Each structure stands twice: as C-alpha cells, then as structure tokens.
Image (tube, rainbow, N blue to C red; front, side, top):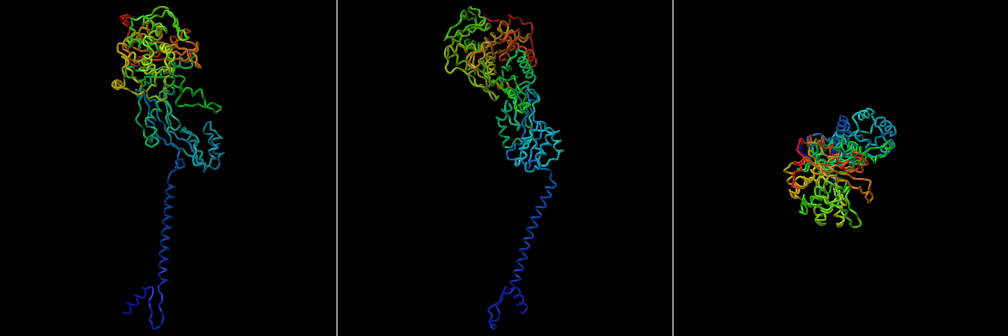
Length: 586
C-alpha cells in the first residue's frame, strides 16, 4: 500500500498535505513537467531545421548536376519555336520548309562589362550595331535579343568566347529553295516564323496562327501543304516575264497560266519581285532598301489595270449571248463616233462596215461600241458583273485588289468600257473571265490549291451558252491566225487570243505615249485546256521597235507556250489545214 501511494505521488502535479500541519497544499513536479515540454519543443525545432537544410542540400545537388538552363531568362513575350508545314508544288517539289536555327539572347543583369561583350561579339557577328547592342546590355532587363537566327559556325565561335550572361534559344527559320521563282505565290514569313504574304499568310489565316498561340504546333513536323502550281512551269513563266521587262525596258511585267477546266493556277509571276529568303534588304548606310521592297507588290492579283482591247472579247461574247449579234452580223465602222465631247475612232481603222470576226481581228473600237449599244447600259453592267469583273475575286491568295468602275454608268461609260477603258480589273480575274468564254461558258473561281474536275463542277457557274462559247473559240482562233494574235502563234499548238493595248492612266489622265499592254490566249483551240495571260507595263520598245501588245505581250505568250506546253502534257499537232480550223458558217 505504501509503495502504491509513493508511485501516485511521484506522478501527481501536486498533493494535499495533512491538515494537522496547517498547510493548504504544495505544487510538486512542475519543474519536471516544464523540462519535459522544453525538450519536446527543442526536438521539433531541430527536426524542422534539419528538414529545411536537407531540402536545400538536395536542390543544390540537383542544380549542380543539371545542364545550363538557356531558357531561364526568357521574358513572357518571347515567341516559341513552332513548326510550319512544308509547302510543295503539285508534283511534290519543295517550295518552303523549316530549318533549325539558334538565336542569341542576353540577360543584362548578369553582364559584368558591356563594352567587353560588344567587342567580343563584333568579332563573330558581322554588321553588329555596337551602340544598339551596348544599350541592350546596359538596360538592366531580364531578357534582350542580340541577334536572331545565327549560323552553327557563329554559335560555336560565341560559345568559345565563354561570355557569362548570354545564351542561345532554338528557333525555326523558313527557307525557300526556289528563291524568287514563286515568291508572290508562296509569300514569306517574319523573323518569328509568322506568315506575312502569299500562301504563307493564307496558312496562318486558316488557323495555324491560333494553334501557334495556343502552343499546339510545337516542333513536330506537320503534313505538307500542296499547291496547284507546277514548279517547272512556274520557273519558265518567271524567266520569260523577267527577260521581257529587261528587253522591252518596261516598268513591270507578269503572266499567269490557268487550267480552264478546274480553275487551278499552274503558274503566276510578277516582276519586279523579291527573294523570300531575304524579304528586306539593308543598304550600306544601314537604311532599308525601299526599292527592293517594291518587289513585294504582286501586280497579277493585287493591282488593277484598264485591260484595253482584251475587254472586246467580253463585249462580243455579251452581244452573242444576248442574241443581239451573230458571227454573220455586220456593224458600221465607217466613221468615228462623237459622244459627250469625245471622239471614238479606230487605230488603223478600215473605214467600212465590218463583220463580227473582222471587228475582233482589226480590234475595232467603233464596231465594239456598236455591239455594246445594242445590248444597252444596264445589260452591259449586268453581264460584266456576272463574269466577276466588277467585284472582288474570291481565292486563297491574300491581298486581292477590288476592281474599279464608274459610280453611275452612262452611255459614254458603256461605250468606252466596251473596249477596255473606264473599268480597271486585276489581270488574274481577267484571265478567269476569259477562261469562262472558251471552256463551255462556266465561271470557275481560281485556286492555288489542287482541285479535281468533280470539285470544279461543284463550284462552277454557267454564265453564257455553250453556243456562245463555241463562237468565242472561233473568234480566238481567227484572231490567232489572221489578226494581232499571230505574234503568239506556236506551230503545232493552235494558239488563239486577243491583244490589249491601253493608254496608261497617270495622275487621272491618259498618257498617249505610255502603254499598258496585255494578251490573253488559249491553247489548243480545238479543245482548249489552258488560258495564258501576259501583261507588260510601260514598255519603251518591243519586237521590231513596236510598243503595242502585238509587239510585246504577244511574244511573251509565244515563249511561254512554246516552252511549257510539253510540260503541261499538250501534244503538238502539225499539218492541220487552216480551213479546217476555221470551218464555220461565215
């Protein structure tokens, strides 16, 4: 019993003593309890500190074993190295692809001596802007680009310098193997691999840019995008128009080839052009070469011109389709037309009544105006609208110009528009409208992507009768043999077409001594497959010293067809009697 009481007292915080002593009570064991609590708290603190030091030690070991983190100083606005799909031609030939590159950046907060860094980098990087680079290195910010898209050799040389505070970021650079060959069709990208022009911009508009922003493109290769153009044909067309601009001392030139059955663009070139691998060029004084950048302008789809007498094709087709004329009709072209203070006359006119084939052959302004007058102002405007010549063309190519026309059509407007003055359209949509005249009467929107015959039928729209189209094929053939189209004739390929020589509009007035020339042709005319349209702006000379379309634009067509027809699968046929080609009730 005594031992039990002793154990209880040893465990108690206090005990009550005997009342005989007169004492109320005494606390015992308090010091022991406090000592126990202190030991527990000290143990917890020591354990916590050991855990913190352990975590810090582990992280230090990880940092020591890890490689250099070159992306550690990136700002929030730094772009990601995302891939773009390859672009290929209809035969799979490469037009655009991505190359893996690196770009140089700096963390100015870690730069010790900015002057030394600039001096070392200038030995490796050509044309380094010392003042601008020094300003970036002294900015005190977390991230600054120093040079985008370095070569592997430059990267190795900079690494050998061992400069702290700078690093490299993997990036993509767009490469165009063909250079200038298809620059206006393919387009180009900026330094961040974002499409700025041509089909490159079209890809971004189709959702590629949104995917990039969402980080969904990554660095994995994407499925190639196939275009409708044939790189072999494109190379020839570009060479022909570039040579013509030089030979005829012109301001610009261009050409396009269309498949009349599908609307596919097989080739399109506009010069001056540019190298998409170097869309901008810097002059020795450091300024941007603005003359070089003028090559960005695509005159085939992004510029409008008065297309001159090529419009006579549409006027005669209108008269035939409306039943106002037939191929056997005769119109009076014996004297000029005076209207609204203007005198309309023919260039080298015959001063006599002309048949409809003769109106086309001799390119009679008077005869064409007479046909337009028979249709009427409203009918004329409606027909050109139906052909798509008065509204913005729908196609994948960004930057398509909108045609211009008079706000209010009067009789004088209808007359002048009948032979190509007073309405300005793009050369590409002129070619598209011409294709509808000879393919059976179907208007097919142009495309820079492959399109099958079935797909073309689903988007085509009948705008003229098949009999009208047959009559227009006859007129094209007639003019190719008898008229101004002789300069474009290629033996064995049966070329037909119409020239257009227009006085160029400068500062709102027609310049009598400066021409804008065009030629629209089709081949082979017995069963047309392709439309070819050429333009040449302000030539100062031409074949045999002439400056008209017959001496400039037509020879361009001849060179293009002669060299590209075999590549397009058109077989030449020789020995066909001329009478068989022109067999008609006339």
